[in-house]
Amino acid sequence: MYFNTAYPGAYNAAVKLKGKHIKGSPFEITVLQKLRYKAMHKPVLTFESEGCADGQLSGPFAVCTNDRGDFLIADSRNHRIQVFDNRGRFLLKFDTKGSGQGQLNTPCGLAIDRTRGHIIVADAGNNRIQIFDNKGSPVSAVGSKGSGEGQFNRPWGVAVDEAGNFAVADFDNHRIQVFNSDGVFVDSLCFAI
Image 1 (cartoon, one colour):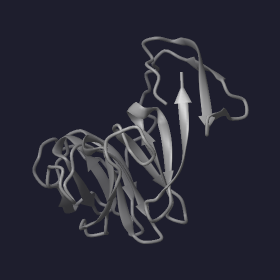
Image 2 (cartoon, helix red, strand yellow):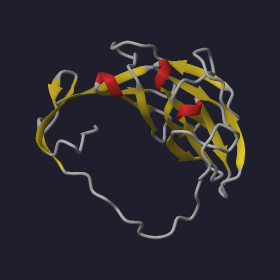
Image 3 (tube, helix red, strand yellow):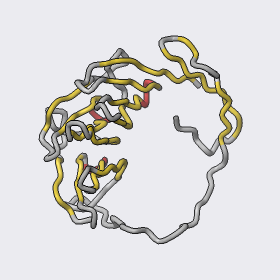
Image 4 (cartoon, helix red, strand yellow):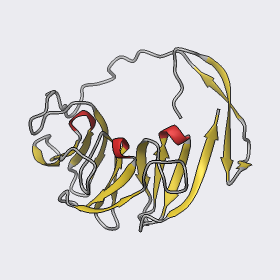
């Protein structure tokens, strides 16, 4: 959940599973004022170039690594995923903007399904999850715009477990949806504030 730090204070947040409060819900959440952090130490690797050419980023939103140690970055404003080696050198991209199979519109989250080697992308602008192979070729897509089971309203993030099941942060529907490794809806967790 995201809380605007411009409005610090105490809030109640209810979390329900299948219409029933989970243990301890509703929770009291204290929102603190925005903290300013100083650099703790020097970065090991930096991606500094802004733009739309290969290797440049505009609105990087999520990052993950594959088994080789390559960095995959959801380059949201360029509507693409870029892959860099562990030294920051550009390797490849998949970047056709649009709504067709394999096309992206504001990717905001990504994760690696290590059981299959697939790249799972939260394609927020298209209200779906897209699954790509490790070379960036489309494998399948899950979901459509809406609020029903398996539908999304700006999927914002994705996480994968060791069996290939994945959970999606369905931002404007205020819930987490869970899918099995074949992309079949399993369950959802709803959040109410």
